[in-house]
Amino acid sequence: MKISDYILNGNLLGIWVALLLGVGYLLITKIDLKHRRVLPKIIIAAILFGIPTLLTYFHYPWQWILIFSIVVLIIVILLFTSILWPLPQESILLFWLKKKKFNQHLRAGENLEKKFFRYFFSTPGKIKFLSELLTYYSRYHLSKLIHHCILSYSRLPLFESEKDAFDFNRGLSYIQMGATSRVEQILDGASASFKQTSAYFFLLAHVVKCKGLLDEEREYLERALHLQDYDGSLKCQIYNNIAVNAHARGNHTDTVHFYSKAVGLLAKHPSFNMKHTVIPNMIDIYLLDGESSKAKSLFEDFQAMIDFNNVDDVLMWNNYCLAYYRQCNDMENLKIVMYFDLLSVCSKLTHEEQCSYRIYELRMRWNNKIEWEKLLSDICKDFDEYFALPFPSSFLAAKEIMFVMKGLDEQQNPLLDLGCLSKLIAFLRKSAPELDKHLQSLPDEFVNERFNFTKDKAWLLQVLFNPHEQNDKDYTIMLDKKLVLLNDLVDIQQKEGNAINAIDARLCIPDEALSQVFSPFTSGFFTRPQFYAYRQKLLDSAKKQMDIVYEELGKFGLDTSVLAFKIRLAYYFMHFNEIEKSCGLYTDFENSGISINHFADSIRGYHDKLKSVFIALNKMGQQAPLKNF
View 1 (cartoon, rainbow, N blue to C red):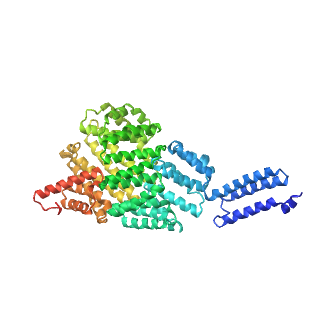
View 2: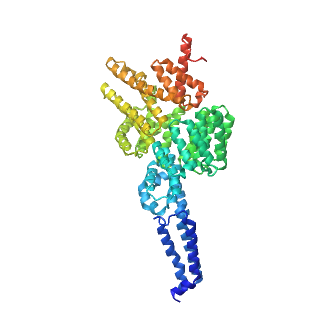
View 3: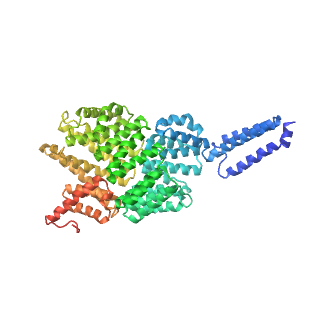
């Protein structure tokens, strides 16, 4: 039989042509067939179609033809579905990577990408992979790999729907990195279709929140929630963010209402990240309101959601247990978690993770005054283990140990081992150049990391200063360098448009200056006549930032999101004897109706000192700063 006769008379070819036309009809409205990602797959599909056709022409057994036809059809379907959706094998690979722990297998992100992601993953698969990385970001510190993926994937030719999904994931990654200006750039360049989605308004709400615009944030979150009628993937997170917004604005009713809605969604569709965010938030509200029975009930429901075969889930759960029992002042259960639960989990961790967790346990024991002595002694014996960790894990571990050592020194505690302290300082001194190198290597997008390590660098200057080897002039030089770094913190946040964080960074300067001038450990230096001018210089730099923050806070009116800043600033103004400003800020706090119990211990300490001062002023017969005093 001639090939031409076979083509005219063969039924199989007709079937293949019909299939091709059908696939083409389904895809042609969404896909440009000239697109370079599609053409190779069409060529491969056409070649594959020819295999069973040739088998038929050469009269192979029909069983062979049927088997090859089914195999070819499956391959062709996979080829075309990979254009729009991740393939099944890609989902299996993602599952495997998660089971093997991202931090162990994905450190060399560029090599991994070059070796097989570029060829194995379809574009939808790559976007899904980026989404999975974001889920594990905080647990495995994958910022560098995420950044590499973003740069690599941004060069891909994306369809509009893929670009929308990529832009959203890219926006989420920049939120986690603190790069608010990058999120704004994404939103400005977004497609018309993306600007009509819930994801767009969700990102927009984050941008205005960083600027301190809580009313606008609530408006955008409500618009995002309205669009969730069509896509419920973000509903739980939006409910949580609306509750956080309501709490910051002093709206207790909405806070409880939207947290409850978020918890209700989690009961039906548990989400790893959200359950470890929403439920602790709701429990904290119950505890602050004195509703301990509701808090306990929700705590038990939370426990029922934990997969105790999943190490990540159990770690997060145990972390919250420590916080919960500490808030409840339940020392017995707090000790049980520390002694037994953490011990059982640590056996499943890598060596590096075990070291990090021992440091975390030391800090928890130290803060809660629970039998920290033996653990500190064991850690001091194993210093070399911690020093051998890769940077920055080694530096961060040393910093936490140094915090405890400093506390022992200030208490003049006989348990302070001067030999261990000298070893620790020697390691930190050795780490200083590595810290500088790490800071220089960070991309612009790594705002939070650059901010935190710059703050650590400022802290390290003071730690490494040796009064026995360095003179008073060296001390002033060190303080000048420290102030430069603290001003850099302000610049880092201002450049990104993070107005709230910039206020926080500004307050670090008066905090540092006042702690130097009035601390019992350093105040003796500034009482010397030759350093009066330098003392005044420090106070002037503090006062300059305080006045800027005071003006900035005036723009927020009675917005409760800045109450912690008001208490801090009121406390600082009291040192400058500016009673009127201090009283005004304190009054704003008292009139807000928000309990001081909602704030960190340091803020409570400032509040209590201010309150005692104003009470004393009233008793002395001066004009009452507050009507209720």
